[in-house]
Image 1: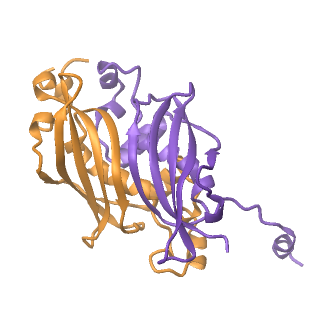
Image 2 (image 1 turned 180 degrees about the vertical axis):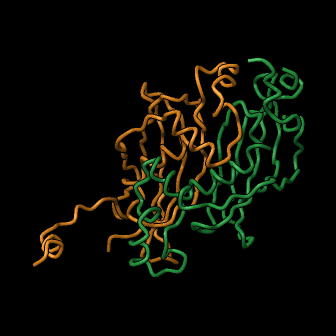
Image 3 (image 1 turned 90 degrees about the vertical axis):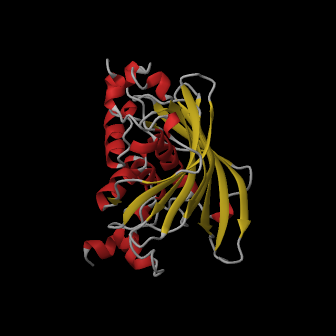
Amino acid sequence: MSNISSRTSPDNYFENFAVGQVIAHARGKTVTEMDNVLITNMVMNTAQGHFNEHLMQKSSGIAGFDTRIVFGGINFSMVIGLAAQDTGEQVLQELGMDKIRLKTPVHHGDTLYAFTEVLEKKDADRADAGIVRFKHYGINQHDKLVYEGERTVLMKRRNAWGSR
Amino acid sequence: MDIVTDLKARAKPWPRGNRFEDFAVGRVFRHHWGRTLTVADNTQFVTLTLHYNPLYTNADYARAHGHADLVVCPLLVFNTVFGLTVEDLSEGGGPFLGVDKLTYHRPVIVGETVYAESQVIAARETDSRPDYGIVTWHTKGFCEKGDLVIDFQRTNLVRKRK
């Protein structure tokens, strides 16, 4: 493959991020029944609270838990996805996550938006990439915090990859 | 008696899932099934979550970065390993609270199969929810050759049996 760098953005390499920078990502996504039930079932998550509407309506009686709730793993995958063109397009390898907290249940029809703060940048054990630690936040259409968590990535340096 | 009434009278429930009392610290679960992560799974997951890194959706690009084929989105590896644990750990009910200390040990390539195993590392009562406890598990995901690809700690509220 030629022109690797032409397939991705020119402005989201290791050098482009500064510690303390806070980003509001461009797009939100309304999480639908398709997203939740499809992904929950695809990953063989057997918890009926994500895919049995009848059970939830008859059994819970607790506000917010009287209808299917979206699997929390999908909630933060979606928020990280919404942040990924900016903070993941130049990622060579995802290294890990930490301090993930799920704060508010998500239901079909709720809309998620992503924000990111750059916590740390450091050298990697290879010259063509660096390590960035982000803190991601997901909020819903009512400005309630749904998720927060850290994510650490190995990211291309522009001086090594920007014109390949 | 009609068929449905008769069925409901004769059928015995075959329950699934565990409760707080089942999670003694140190107990190990080797979870069911395993899951081969296919191109279809990966493409569908990545596009639905808008995770725009071409390593996961462009095989030509992935090979140009030294991979044998498309890389599986690490969040799909996480969600699948998590999914395989649910019947044993959390299907009994109670919200998923958080994840700590998650490490991706190496990239997973499409066509690889993942398995999951967990150990209870903490289980405690909570004053605010007497009908629930808080349990933390250390979950590991392995590929077919037995090499560790992911591990993390997960915490849930877990319903008590009584």
